[in-house]
Length: 484
Image (cartoon, rainbow, N blue to C red; front, side, top):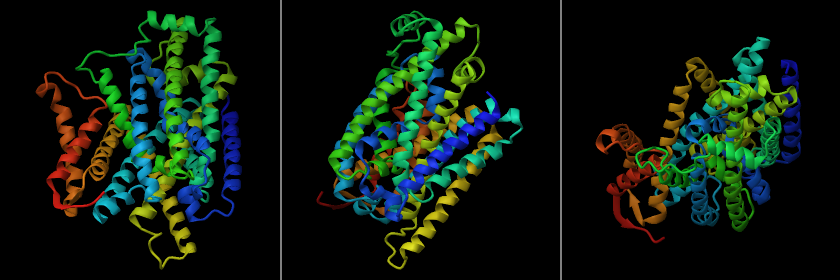
C-alpha cells in the first residue's frame, strides 16, 4: 500500500474526528471540558472506553504473545472483572457522593492538601510516561512499515499526529472524547474482526478447527499452574483485579469519563458492561494471535512477537487488509493519547493549579490557562516520544512501562487507607512514604528469587506496592480519628 494512500487515510480520518469535535464542542466551557457536563450516555462511555483500555500496544503486542504464553493473559482480564466490581460499588459511590471533578480531591477532603497534591503528581508522572511510551510504539510501527519509504522523518510524523490530537481535543475535552473514542473503538474492533475472518478464510478453517489446531500446538493454554512463575494463574487473577482498581478506578483519565455520566447507577452500568466486553475482546485478540501464527507457519514466515501482526498485515496480506490494519491501528492509537492529554490537562489545572477554586480567575482566564496547559502537555508528549526514539530499545520501553506501574501502588495505598480506616495522617511524611514504597517494592522484586526460593513476582507486585504504602501510612497516622 502506497504512502500517499496511507497519509490520505489519516487525513480523512482526522477530518472526521475534527467534525465530531466541532459538533460536540459547541458552547463548550471549562466545566464541559473537565466533566462533559455530566451528561454522557453510559453505554456510549462504556463502548468508547474499550479503545482507551486496550490502546495501540494491545493491538500490536497481545497477538504476538500467544506463541510463548498461550492464552494465559486472559486470566489477567478475568481478574479485571472483580476489580471493576470494586470500582463500581466502592469507588464510584464515593466519587458521586462528593461530586468530584478530579478524583484526587478526595484525598484533600480525607487527609489534606499534601496528600492531594501527592496523589495528583503520582498520576501525572505515571500517565505521562505510560501514554507517551504507548504513543511511541504505535508511531514506530507506522514509521517503519510505511513512512520511512517516503523519507518522512520520525519527528514530522510525531508532530503531525500530536497536532491532530490537540486540534480535536483543544476545545471540547471530555465532552468530545466520549464520542470520538466511540468512533475509534468501532473502527478498531471492526479491523480486529476483519483480520480474524480473513485469516480463517485464507487457511480454509472455521473457528472450531482453528481452536483444535491451537490446542495441538500448545497455543491455547489458559492456566499456568507453576506457583513460582510470574504467569501463575492466581497471580494473574489477583494482579488483574488490582490493575483494574488502580489503572481505572484511581486514574483520572478513566474516571473523568465515568463521572461524566449523569447518575451513579448509569456509571455503574458502564463499568460492569466494560468489564464483560473486555473479556470477549481480549479473547479475540489472543485468538487472532493464534491464527496469525498458524498463517505464518503455513506460509513459511518466521515472525514472532510485536513484528507478527504488522508485518503480515502490511507486507503479506492483500492491500485492502493492509488498509484495514492501518485504520484499526490509528483507531487504537488515538484513544490512549487523546484521553491522556485531556486528563493530564484536567488534573494539572484542577489539582496542581486549582483554577476552579480561585475565585479571582474569570471563566475566560481559566480557559486561557487550560489551553496553555493542554499545549504544554502536547509538547511534553513530543519530547518524550523523541527520547524514546533516540533510545530505540524495546527492552527500555518495557522497563519504563513497568516503572510507570509502580507509581499506582502508592495511589492504591492512599485511597485504601482513606476508605477503610478512620485515621488522619502526618501530612508532611506522606510524600516520603509514597516515594519509599515503590523503592522497597523494587528491592523485594529484584531479590525475590534468592530470598523466596525462586519466587518471581508478576502482576501482583502492584498489590505488594499498595500494601507497603498502606503500612507506611499506618506508621505515620495520628491518634485523631474521623467519623466516616
